[in-house]
Length: 571
Image (cartoon, rainbow, N blue to C red; front, side, top):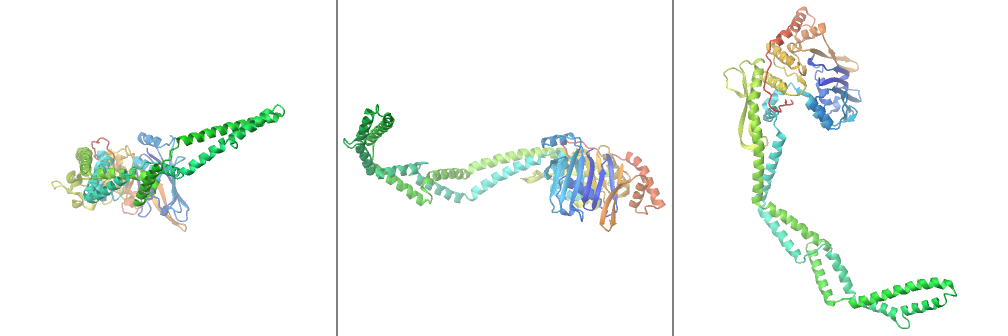
């Protein structure tokens, strides 16, 4: 069993409701407008459907839906991959407040709407009452076959996008080749102009430092000579004076001990002064303050400034600018290389074609199997001798969905030529074909809980009995829930719930009640169109309930070969 229990509080017109899901086939019936679809709406909300403030019951502050479920091994592995810890009971709780903001938890851990949808896709397969409309839309038809065949459409779409990007790049290059050639010429000229300078990062700062030094050459020489003279002058030089002072203090240090300490300081100062004098002498001996070098620096600095003004950029940024232009030119030349772009386009087309051929093979393998299964199901749904075909038509050009179009064809009567479903089928026939597809694909799928929302509209009589029998058979190994207005379907169910709307001064409220025995016979009688408590209606209802098992036992069950990786598509 997949679904265990659902609890609603202040959801639409339900004040509070709790239902225990059971194995087998369960029907939900009730008067028109009683709110039979609220339960499905609540399940969809719990499993990530878009929240709407209108879901909150009037006069309530918030709506709350909780659902327990038992995960199959595949879903359990996914839950573990998502970081959720194993539990004895898995409980989803989603709350919607007044402003329309929702929050959800799986057990005690927050969970996103995307994760809820992923869980719902593995737990539930919902077939709506207007599912037949999808048979008239090409993309829905193709999606149904692809889901049945286990086609990896994501890989196909990605390969197509890569191909289109390569095509667009080539088209753009061809269209704007003239403009790009002009841009290439401009970049080439600009780079050539800056290469006259060959700027190096950090050179601008070094040039300024050298220029400032050479500009003050005479002042530097005068300062060094003055310092050397001040240190070495015979009578007044600092070295001589320090030496005299040191000698006098040392001579009398045996008399005044404090002189020794002062003498040590003077000795250190004298040594430092001597080192400084040697350094000044060495600088004067080796200094190269050539006026011609200054002129050369002036010329290079002038070129830097001239180019900076021409290209309207700070001089220190020239070295980085030329590197940027080189990179732009490289990319531009690559984009203008039509041969390169043509090779890339060819490679992308080959990659797409390879994936598309794999998809085509899977479609051609699955198409006759799907057609055979649906044809079998149609025989018991009021279309004896009818045939269903899945036609694959080669496209004139490749497209995002592959190399062929998919079309559903049907012949409603023996001997008639199969034609597109939307052109030969009436509304009632469309509903029956849709139901045949739903039953067939659900039979082959892995989803454990199947929900049918009035997909039996437009049928009746023996066909309705057959629908009930088919759903009953699905319930033998699945959890099946159907909302129906047909007594024949309701009488086939293992479990029967009745939805009723109660009106009071506080407003309308829906309630769900499990019925067995006489109450169930009364509901079946009401659905037959007679007085629910009339003797004739009650007798008919009782007869239907008693005979359901024999009808089910004599109803052929649709069979089909399950293709590899097949999964029932979501409606």
